[in-house]
Length: 363
Image (cartoon, rainbow, N blue to C red; front, top):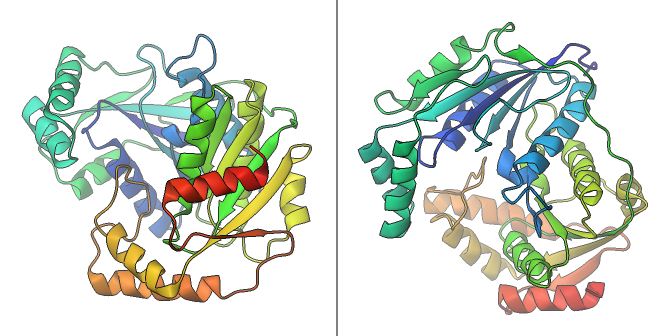
């Protein structure tokens, strides 16, 4: 794909919890990708998981915006023309993404509908009341050159139509300049990989939580969540984006980073390590028995505390989970690249596996 030398067009959906940011952003991305557009997708929260938070940026809004700006450089180099973003940002002026044409869309919804959506997520009643109250107290105003869209009455396909129609090439505000490109940084990177449903995300989260609790500034990233672009299937875009995210976190003082996700097809450790150099990369593969992988695939159908974009197990019938488990078992049977540490995650709890992983890496 040829490099995109024009400004990257960015559609950023923001708004209170329950207004449909994630659902609509993913649906717009899928619609455009199906239509053959050179488009990418990211949830802004995936770009800000670095704690303790930088001084003066407790909600990491500035960190997320810098990370997003860095991401746009690589997307343009890969020929991507449009980027769909979901997630909350600071109120006030729209974020600045150098070299990008940004259209901000503030989503809103009626209070009772917000309440229903938040209750359906299983949130405690006190938290639901607080979030609905905060949403009702904020009268949305369009950000610079932006729009406001009420998601109360229309179905998702209709809202997607309206968003796509509202996003012609001239929509939004073009920011001058070039995306930032942070310097390579020293540090330690732990990458947990393994077949689908082996538990790498849960183990990785437990591992990074231990670093946060000890106040060591550490980043976290799900490589798959940084890989959504129309030409990224089986490629290295997600890894390159993750390496750029590491440099962004390191510029804010991060010393370590935990990654979770599949390795690129045909990847070799020296090649992966070179993307993060001079940081040191350790890759560990979690493994489990076929029976355990099948059982975990079935459990994943019910979802979990965090719903991720592109989750093809959530809400699926048992036979779909069985097919995904079959693929996971086949994936695990492939040869392990030289230098990858193998970890048995079959019978132990995620917390116990995380402790073993941290002991093996020396953290």
